[in-house]
Image (cartoon, rainbow, N blue to C red; front, side):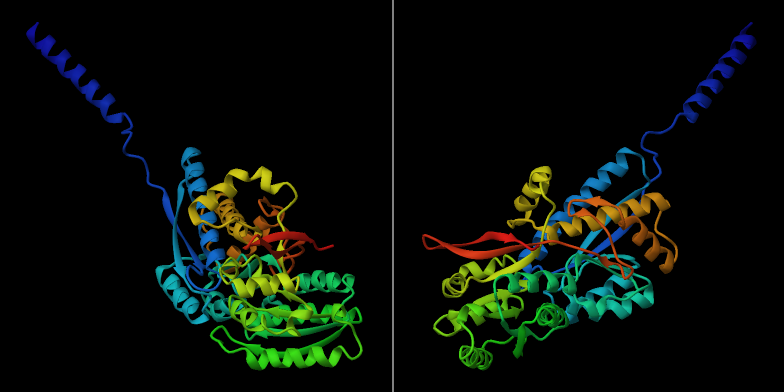
Length: 405
């Protein structure tokens, strides 16, 4: 009897241990595959307001997708690393070298066409997907490369701006520009379309991001205005400056000249709602006096209401209001995540990565609207908001003027 009880106890203990051993340890979950996302933004200096707000939007997107994938048991999680390029092509290239060495294949940014030009050979040779939220230069519109762009290009902006200038009865445009591929490309896009509509174009100088003395360029502009007023009124003459933060000092130096202040001035997408301008009273007043405005890629109608929580979150994190170029980074990452989910991981080859990102992008309904890329991987269309500066009892602020047609 004792032997029978002992045998039975052994059997019960064995069965118990077997059942316990087969139970799934709640802590023993297969870890998710970590995928690195790199971002190239200006976090200090020119365009820092756009870089910091874009970084905030991207952080939010990564957090959203990581939570969603975890909840749905999708076995991937994303790690974000941001590099501060200060819109400097050399810094962008150095960052790209670090990104390549880490094995990362997904890059969001950089912000400018000059930076894209610097890193493009490395991206193409190593099969690294690079998606810029704001580059516009048509010289970078190349089929079958690793560069994609979610902002409308300089030809689309150019046509919109030229149509607006003609509508405002401008007969001549005097053009000056920062000497980089993006700014010069935008200048060419605007002035080319303006000339095709019958307008006269005069290019009067270039400068770089380190220029502090604009006297020669401004003298050229002034002399051209004086020459044109022999046959035109000042209302028929405009000045176009395609540039970044250096325009603040340019406007400051132009502000004391009555001739320079007598005509309308226009900016490019690189100066859209520039926050640093507002700290310079003389430069800001010059933009008020000359009815200056810049074009910016427009969010879809009603997006400010539909995505109010996202917009508030971006502002809370960065201290800057989000616009379409800010939120393009948010859309880019969501498309990357969808691609990885549908592919069950990162596409193995450069050609597959390129093709799958293109396919996943087209038709995606994001914050910036339904995305449609052309055959070169660039956004195929866009409408633009025009914003100028007003003096509200001594406080300068940007205000909405209207939209392109």
